[in-house]
Every structure is written in structure tokens, then in C-alpha cells.
Length: 371
Image (cartoon, rainbow, N blue to C red; front, side, top):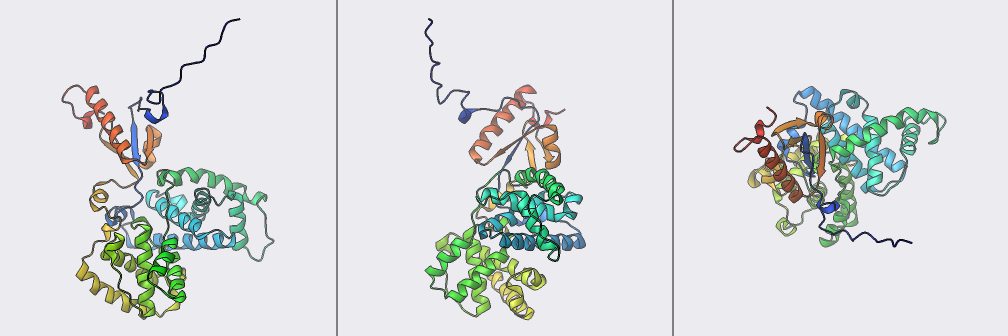
């Protein structure tokens, strides 16, 4: 009988190790690194330029957020799941201008909620979400369950949209929300229960704006507390630098909220609780206050230079030839590598640039690789 020799142990630094795998095929390779926070300039570049289209886009976005909240509350989802769903929806609308999907926004909202359930460990089937939506939209009809054949087509659409939503977020599932921080800040500054509840309600409304795409959770929490104090006529001196956030970034979020309450009150929890003149008065006071702090909306994410120099998330570079490719084309004509680690991105960028240089001879520019 022959003895069977076991294979030698694989070195952790072996080229075959997943931790050290390098890019082998450089042709049509695209790298997209996750950027959880965007600047105002990046977002403005992705929004509709026509005023009528922009107004329609805002209305559709708010309708989807209200739908997410209604279905989420009906299914007793935690706030974090609904907040994640709204962020996913906002990012999808920014990076995908598909006329069919813009018209059928409810399918996108349902998919956003479905993906958020996976991210936040609130496991529900897509059919359960669609069934809850159907029952809410048809209260007079006989309620249906998740096995009903009426949901078959909707389930197929959700499956098709799911990957597009994941690509819009660069497969980055690191989501943190403002609500836990609101409770901590409220205890720190001895807020009353009523004021804390007001701030909590405002924190739900802030996810109906684009502020969560621009601001960190602690900046959002401080902003909703600031607005709650303004609306209730209270004032507490907060040293914002102590929490590594600038006063202007907080005021920028407050401005977004006041704009929401001024122009779209019916879509919010807090908007209808005060007269419209109250919001106008606070906006005037806020504008005067911001003049002393400077208007730096793009400073939300705390890293201005990186935000302004980074391409928007729906654009990624073909590092082998220096071209910029739209999100709808790059996956069809090449391989997209989604990354979270900036150092890994720089490492692979260097490999791809070196390969492009070698392919074109000494002194050739990578940008000429495709010629």
C-alpha cells in the first residue's frame, strides 16, 4: 500500500492566497472605490439641471421615502432599516437615470427596503414587502399574503433592480445612523424628554433630504438637536469642535431641513406642526448666522480635499487606458472591481498604470493605451 503524503501547507503569503491576489487581466479593468460621503458639487452634477425636472425628482424622492416609512412601520422594522433604505434609494436615483425606473419608483423603493433588510439583519422576503405594500395601497380590497400570484412580476423586478442598488453603493454595507447619537447627546446636554422626542422625529425627516449622503451621523445628530432647540425656543451652547464637526456643517444640514419644511411640509413628520412663517423666520436667521461662519456645504464629510478631487460614484476610471466610463457601460465592456480600502485601490491603480505603460513601450502615456 502506498503511503499518502499530505500536501504542504500553503504559505499565507502565497500568490494564490486570497489576501494577496493581484489583478491578472488588465484589459478593460475598472476600479470603483466606495465613497460614502459626497460633496455638494458632486451631487449637483448628478441632479437634473432643468428646474421642472428637478422639482419632479424631489417630489418622487420624497414620495418614495414616505412609502418606505409607511411599509417599514407596518412591518415593524427598526428605524435603522428604514434609514438605510432611504439612503440606498437616494444613491440609486443619483447614479441611475433610467426613465422606466424613475416612473416605477415604487419598485426601486421596495428593492431598497429589501436590500436594507439584508444589511441591517431585518430579514424579510421581497414578497412579504410587496404584499405589505399592496395591502396598504388597497385598504378596501381583500388582504393578500406573500404567496399571492399578483406579486410574481414585482418579485422579478426587485431581483433585477437589487444588483443595480448594490452597485450604486459600491457594495459598501457600512451604515451608521444618527438616532443612537441623539440619545447620547440628549443625555450629555440634559435635554428634556419632549425636546429629545422632537429631535428624534426630525432625525427621521432628515433622511428624506440628501444630507445623509453628505454628512456623518454625529453631524446629523447635532443638526437635528440644533433645529429642535430653535423650534422650541431653547438654546444650549455646544462646542462643536469637541465633537470633531464644524459649526457650518451643522448649519448646512439645518438649512436642508428648513428647506424641506418650507416647501414640502406634507411629506414630513414635523413640518405640519408649525406655521410656515416659523420656518421662514428661522431660515432668515440661519442665513444671517451662516454669513459669519462661511457657507461650506461641501465640508460635510470632514475631508474637503478628497471629496472635491474624487470622481462621482457613478463614474469610474479605466485605469489601463485613462478613460472615464459611465456606470451603464463599464460592466458590459469590462470588469468592475469594487473596493473599500483606499490603499488597495492605490496599489491596484499602480499595477494597472504600470501595465499600460509597459504595453505601450517606454515613455508612452497610459492615456494613449486604447489608440
